[in-house]
Image (cartoon, rainbow, N blue to C red; front, top):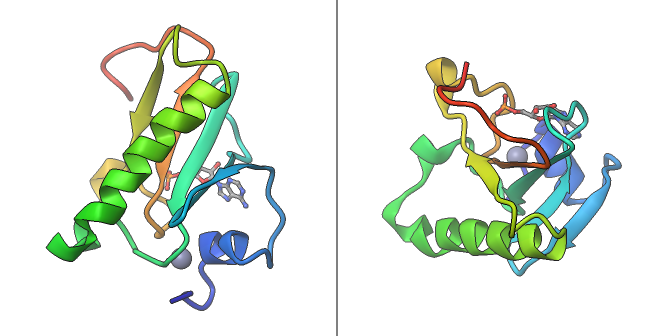
Length: 116
Ligand code: AMP
Ligand code: ZN
């Protein structure tokens, strides 16, 4: 179900444009508007889920699909061999600003640790 006023639901259903980079049964990938690395995209479920903290046990197949789709997308974009980072900001302290679950896929430069 789409959530009113959720920007990522609007991207998922085509109401707001985005540079789409792939699609799986339950997820889509699109370029982040404010990239933090040469390759920076977001993997989101098509259905609204506010955050990882809102996922139920029944969502485990969906959560698995987000990761396998991220892996497949990284390979398709040619960044799998050099490596990449997946990030799921969750809640206030996690730095989450858009409240529709998303996996950041960052690649194309050496990442540092710890994250800010
Ligand atoms: P987070 O801080 O983890 O919630 O990340 C939200 C991300 O969504 C940020 O990296 C934003 O640049 C990105 N973002 C926000 N609005 C859009 C949009 N309309 N299209 C693509 N990316 C977006
Ligand atoms: Zn949503």
